[in-house]
Length: 134
Image 1 (cartoon, rainbow, N blue to C red):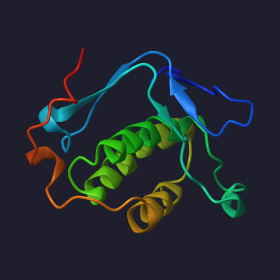
Image 2 (image 1 turned 60 degrees about the vertical axis):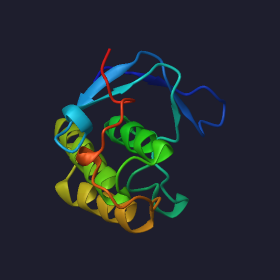
Image 3 (image 1 turned 90 degrees about the vertical axis):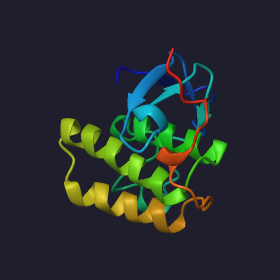
């Protein structure tokens, strides 16, 4: 994915999608999700203690973080499924960036255990329309 985000504030607490993008994953309804321009997300909530390992806003984390935050904001499906989508997207981008698989595994564990908790129906079984691509 080419730079769909920028840091809109001086303290870099949120990122904004500048150019909408479509991402694909088997767990998403219809297999895809459209993320519109203007969507704000935090770039991965990584505790400061771990910033030496991975800091918020690292490019290889942004796509997965963005999609995960959108799923959580909409409370679509189960939180665990949103974490799986996050894991799979950052795994693709981590490989391109030369990051180790164990880092992806650790981030997935943190998101699935300590991230938002919601829902009881798998994402791909829902019939919701915010996922249509443009």
